[in-house]
Figure 1 (cartoon, rainbow, N blue to C red):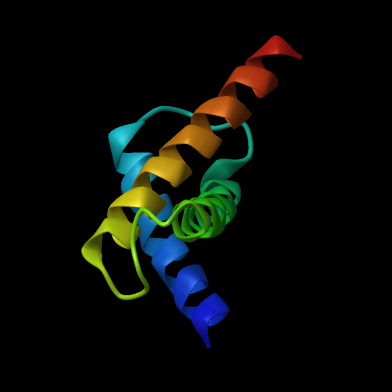
Figure 2: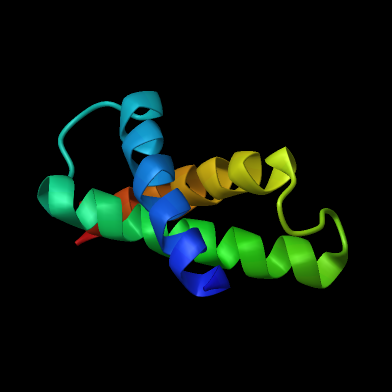
Length: 82
């Protein structure tokens, strides 16, 4: 159930990441949302592993947004270089 919650949070985090970083993405809206899910899962895993926050805290959602923005920025950087 925890994984499903992070996927749902990732959907919202991906949408917020798109709002924070406007512009054309090489993959479109669907890829941006999928990158948001990946960023949220990554941030959730790293944050809990490091002991920064516990399950159910608001810091997890903020970390998901930051993770989504980071993954989207890395994706755009690699897509522009090709």
